[in-house]
Image 1 (cartoon, helix red, strand yellow):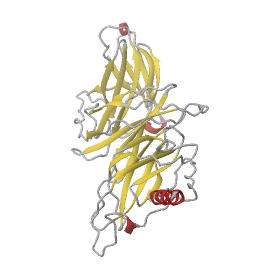
Image 2: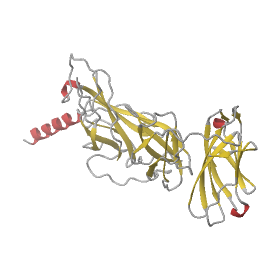
Image 3: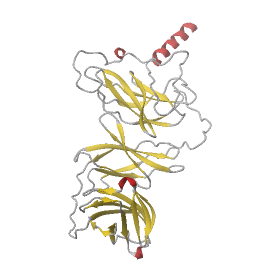
Image 4: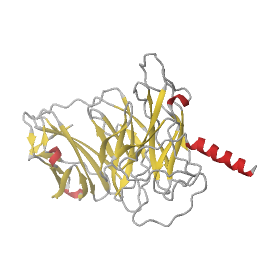
Length: 386
């Protein structure tokens, strides 16, 4: 009976493992999961998956969004480096679900990590490292479902508790997840704008990647460099909502868990003012303060009749405010007497007629009430405020 029981045990394990299908690992070179007792993972034929099959009917609709994502560790020690695995609830489709694609978040964005016809999938990874992923269903006609919600799970050694391996050299501590996402941080911007609270890291956060959910994926639409904590995306349909998440990254390539999703409204923006002075530029200024420190955001519009090809923006403050530049973004900033000056970057050198660019800086001041700028000038010409 002992031999029969052992044989039945191996058969049960083989049937469970046959439900798994391991796909490519994407950008990171990760080893595939080894076979256990000479039983390898294998893809399940479509006909064996509940709710899946071949139909002669026309397929006009994509599968439903996969749901119920949850950690689902492999039942044995896959390999010494660990394995990240999840389960999900099956999608439905008018003619049948053909399979699922599992995408993993890497420093360069989401990459295809595995494809399977089952509702469990994963990939090899660094033991105890957190991995963020999502799932998309495919039907027999090639239609793709909306992407599932994001899930972040650690790479483990299976269903047995994961031990504490010897620390690897280098920085392997990810930043904390960005929090406090807030919509419409720049009201007059035509499109989506939002901001968030800073992440922390044992060394330093070097960037924030912004992802927008599309019909079938999560697309990276921008990267923001600290100390800036805001994002703007033009060219969207005004009045429509878009879903975003933010991921922090450090110099070691460690990625935070994604922020909670933010549903942001694309706005038309405030109408561009027509300066009565005939000024060739308009500057919209907004500052947030904390202690004797301000974070200034400026939108510079070309209201003249010719494109601006190369620019220097000067911001004048009262001398008594003792404003001193700390850092800046989207321009090369320097101290300019009682104020600051920013010179264009190569990518925003030209400001077309009626167009605008967004810049900002952080500065310290003497204390008391936050100082207000006395003047703005673009290439020495005074700008109107709007």
